[in-house]
Image (tube, rainbow, N blue to C red; front, side, top):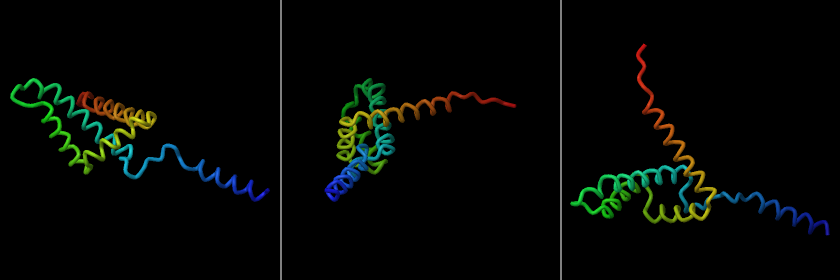
Length: 120
């Protein structure tokens, strides 16, 4: 009986040590996902604000081209990104952390750009 209790305790301990936030190896890590997703968001905004106004360009094709450039820049494939994106969408807490990091980084960048130059 004691052996069974010890075995049960060890099994529970092993399973409880496995973090629910552990991200599978095939999924982009949060810092990488943050960087890629931020660039994808900026590309979409660029497409919406500028490319769609240019009637000589196909906005959807241009957006796909920009995304491919982003994936190449970050050394990820389109499939890796979208598989990771789906994973993060299904894990709201992780997605919120990534989005919060993007927002915080954007706010820091705004503060850096807005600071006036003060001559002494």
